[in-house]
Length: 331
Length: 305
Image 1 (tube, rainbow over the protein chains, first blue to last red):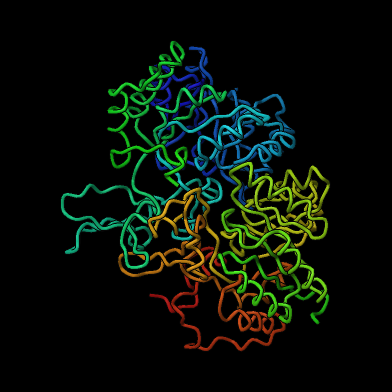
Image 2 (image 1 turned 60 degrees about the horizontal axis):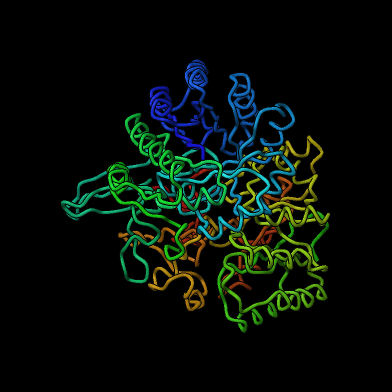
């Protein structure tokens, strides 16, 4: 299985490659990718440098152009596709059907991967993207149980990449408009979720409050660990109870599923976190490299090393991890 | 009867889980409402099994006899082989046009050479993707819920310039469908596992309000679906919609008072809606932000501040 790691900037890309990533993925400095953060992502020059660095070490580079081209910006998105092709990336990661069509027509030899934002959750959906746009690989949304992944994998017409570790989106990706409902900006339109420009922290007599565009997302008592106010991970009141009504602050960690994912013929495992630091990327890539190497040596006897789990726990949201939807009872 | 180029009104699928009796009563009433299109079916959760495909077809036939165009809408989040089996049956219904809400449905329909309506969650934001859909058999498309008037107006102009003439539908009334998860938030609230949810959604015929700790209605939980906390109401924009070339305004069913809502929109499209007085509609739970290029939850009709 290929280890695919996030590269939010050149130092992170190099650390990922050094620590054993088989492939890295990056985006340009605009809203054409789903991690549009200030100071993050690549200029043309930095991308060239990163691609050279990875290729010189036999590693692959994917370019994420996985937001949805907006009515006033089509040429910005096609320019990103052309630019990535010119840079010599190994694959494009895309979601928009129009843009997939454009890439298939203009750069037929360049591999197209379906982004998780393309929301393909069945082999029929994969077949659609395969037949219409010739996708080679798809990244699966984090909404399927392992049994459902198994059923899908049996009939998939394309290679599959699954999320292995990192922030957990619990909505079907690409079909979540919660962020624009509160802030006007969403993953699809702007490549952001719960964007930092709308976040306010305030100390009040009731405790530390986090707000997103004025809406109270959470309130922390003294000594409670405060997390980034991602809108689906706050505490809300439903029917008289106040709790994490949608999801707790937690990260996905599928280390223990590795033997099963391997057996299902999954081609690649993906680490989330282009917005995280080079130190995060380095640490996570290193642990997953060790895990995948051990898996290959003895797939039958694979068990996650407690030190790996502890190491991943340290860089997880809320310092806790979950198997998320892979595990039926999570639902 | 509406004039030929008048904005059409459609009833969207019921997003909530009602009892069989409530669906029956609702559609018996709807047969007499001034809507041209009725979209039927369960789009949210495969565990909501009270209504079988045959039940929807029965309701559809009655509505069709009464002159409505009937569309069957597919489940938005397809997860299992069982979901796919139900989807294929829906697509092969042999009578009614199907609204495709994900690429699984697109595959079933386009591979069979069947025409379809493209649902809002297909994310058609540009002429290129609309062109792909048109070549695959699309008859009508629903704009993404988060798209503004300005963006949509431009998109429609660009589509016309490229010869893409498929009519466009806009979500004009109701709690906005904003997200789908494999987790059931209603079952979670009732502390039941999803697989043994005991169909608690039926206790909430208009969903379950999720409020901030300051009691602001932020979202509405509806099983695995999350809707907006406020109800989008674009009744004062329908003249503008018609002028832009939007063909259909969708009204999303609610369990009470739907007849009055349809009446208001029908009046609006005829230019007979009373203009809003300064104090007339200060309903806190209304929103229209998306249409005006703002956060969806905003209500631009409220006085600023």
